Amino acid sequence: MLVISSQNKKVLSEVEGVLTGAEIGKRPSWVYGITSKMILELGKYESEERAIKVVHDIRRQVETWTESDSVKDRKRTGQKFVHQMPRE
Image (cartoon, rainbow, N blue to C red; front, side, top):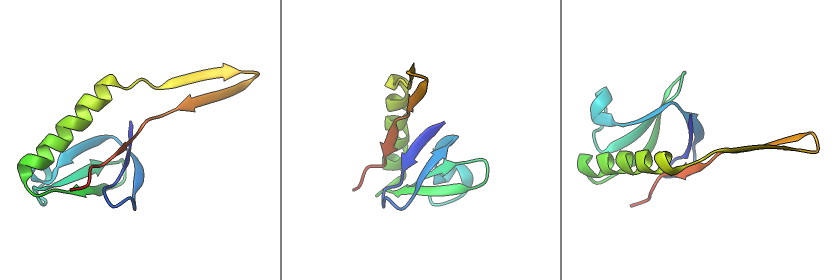
């Protein structure tokens, strides 16, 4: 799972997948997040090509992220990374 903050910062959600609108019959220049319950609009870009680049940038970022989880003095601390959708 990936936590993403939408471009307008009105949505912060854990998503199972990220894709362009063209993949789901919606606006091709938009990037959407998929959850178990809904499809979220995450960002609007000037073209479908830019939306595809944003999805690929997220993929590259996910490949390099490492979540941390530690226990100290009986307290468990977990850290997840939050991706902020780029503004145009």
